[in-house]
Image (cartoon, rainbow, N blue to C red; front, side, top):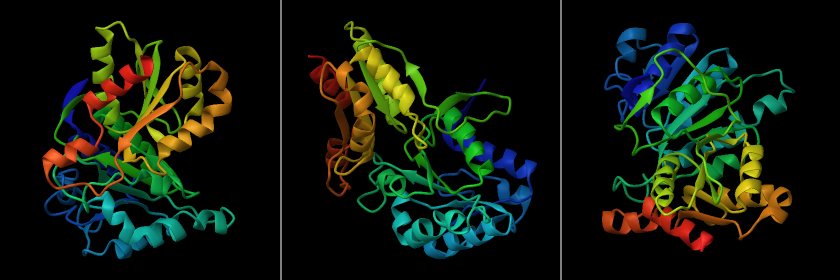
Length: 324
């Protein structure tokens, strides 16, 4: 194992896949000369040249469309949106083109496109640069949706995304880029649709996404001291969703808390709860609960922002409320 930052893990995944396959290209605002807004592509333009690492104009609808066209021709483009909020500008290309064209061509056209974007609050980036919009894309048939937690998860899942013949929405939490984690030295991949149990327990299950997996594990470790044993599941991917791991865990613990930084209203936590209800209903000792971001535009002020997004303390409190 080696210790590197989350941003470096993303860069390593891109580097390894670009070295392996000359059809892998990178497009986006500032991905080339300055190495990415969050420094996830440092050195790649110097190594692979401007034709494979391309700085684009500030026009998400255009360069996502270019990425789709490149995928049609046999390339494997990785398109970076500077913030997930800018997904809105490119949504026609994402929802009506990338997601549907393999289906509409009867499988004759592959769309090996990966769209990367930072999500999440905590950085005082305000209402137009802080959202977690995974529910938007998870709602659309034809898209795979990935939310890695740690650097090791980000690297392994990104390599799988680039190799996939379908469009993948890859969401990286912006608060993790500068944090260091242990990552395997050897090359590896992580398959889609296989959740990971990161902390074992028998009193309550937490199913979490993105960096809330880390915060859930922190809360679970605090609760260990009080004799409350929490099982924490890193969902890794929303589409495909590993329902079996959640169901088996809830059958053991009898309680479920779903933690996701997306807005609670019409969010993925409600969908997950209902999708497993028939399988776990008679095993439940308490209603399924969820924790997410309050349904308000994210404030610029840290004092206000941190009050509306989930954190370790809120997760701890919610578990105590459920267990009683």
